Image (tube, rainbow, N blue to C red; front, side, top):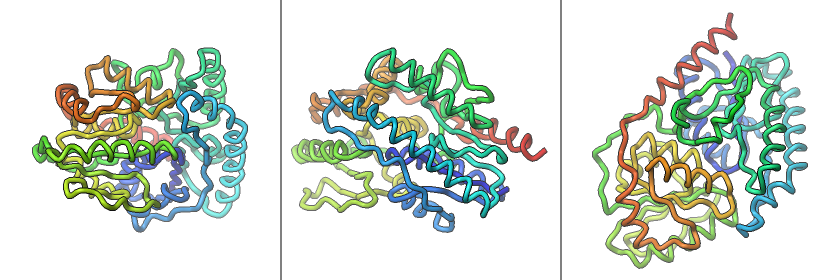
Length: 362
């Protein structure tokens, strides 16, 4: 089959969690294409050099650097988001006439469905947290469900039991029609993991998310890490188009970004990971059974919710960015988040994909 996969451009998490899907479909002999731009497109090309990537404009949302106005800034751009959804719908109609795709998989891009082609929406955000109030949450939920129902199927990125790793985000009272829990999706799902390589004094810092928050977070972490020579830090900037930070002490290594293979090497070696509480990163941590210090993006209501939820589950240590004390918080993080048994990511994914593929082929 000829398959189009298109991730949302809000950070790189939507792109990284498409990696196991692309790997699976290629291994099954399907002809896979992607649609993305800028950093997302670059990340896909680095992981799949032969993968054709069509340029597709992202939503290009602007973010506030102020925690108090972060959610309001997003809400103000809802008309812009709806306009982008309309634009990508027109783009798909045009490219479908040329390419004749047999299946379309959209990661949170709500305009990428087609009346004549099986179309799947991939998401963990069924109950979006607006960060404003419950009334706004309910309104967004209704709008969201209307958008999801335009697709033939909804693959929910989480485990179904025990509220999974996303809590109420992916476990609302009412599910969309033709939905299924596809399990957790990690860019390392298909890799052989060595769980014995970790060294306690190796600290991996993963930066991600929108500007200017990403750069502000990076500066804060580097300033505090400079005073901790007892550790070996590796910083991955999460900015494929950015410049490398220079002038760092020998115990701090810096990469603008790493492809999945090289990132796995650093993840395996890390005794602790410091990162945002983005959902894709959490899935990577779950697969690799890593202890972590989670620092949600200030004002990002979903990340703040995930941090609270995971603390309740006894996983990881979390702290607000303005309260971060790297020296003491690293010690607390080492005491939290007991390792759990590896999750069968690929097997869970196949349980949803294989029946669906048989159904649309018949």
